[in-house]
Image (cartoon, rainbow over all chains, first blue to last red):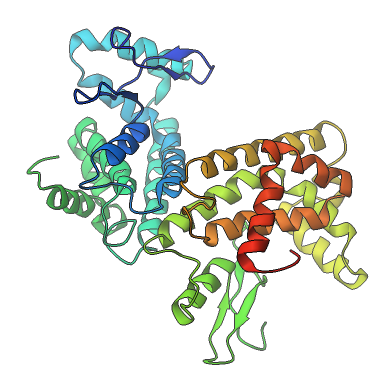
Length: 197
Length: 197
């Protein structure tokens, strides 16, 4: 990232950190850090299938913050799980950066017992809130019948959870909200014409 | 409200409370409680000038929650000011309901000193965040060139603040973010063709 001149993002304490994703566009040399900015860049540069319906960029940026704010109180538990499936060479960097981010050792992130239970409650509460957001649209997507970056935010964290959680943990999540989250992933597969997420 | 059969909303402890606004539509007898639901009803029933651009209802409902979440940490200070300008007959009900809501006496809502200072900081921080949301649109409104319920949310709380704050306090707010908030109110006046807000 230094080599290509990608910009950094910030730790909560204000210091710099390199984060993925980063986009380097071979067509024009643009280098973009941060998922939201990448999506905006791609919409502006390759507008065939936009992910921001007309005039929704600001609203979806607020949705992004609100969504992350919902998931955040529960995030350390899946981060523990993510560590378990990393390649050996990645573990050290993953741990050192996250431990710095949270100012907590791995063992303190989500210890089994009341704290883990609280993360489960927070995660279920978060998704139940997000379900009320889906209940307010007039289509299957947050922006009605148009698939957007708002759905990508929800779907991509669901994909992440489906990969990092243990099987029984993922099954637990799929029982919430009348199976809304497996259904959403199935809808995304169909919309994006992919076999697997 | 009981007489017309309007529904209640909730205190944080889950008990019922009657809140305004409530709409009774003389054309079809509909009775709607809660600002958001009223706006949705009016859009559906009288669609000449909608306040929810196509497919933005869910996004704007999330904006609503995010906006209130921003303003909330600072709200007790303007609530103290609001009490000062109420008619005598309203004060008792206003105080008893808000004191129940916060489980705090009026004197404890926003005492001058560090707590009041903290409310000011929270209010400035909130509006600075909301400014970053406006910075992300491609027009003067949250949904580009289309005035929407999102702008109404921001503008109506600004109107409220302009009414309840003391003159010097309101002037302080108007210096934030390069005068963005007085300008927004001027834009709303012009958009809504009203002389005064």
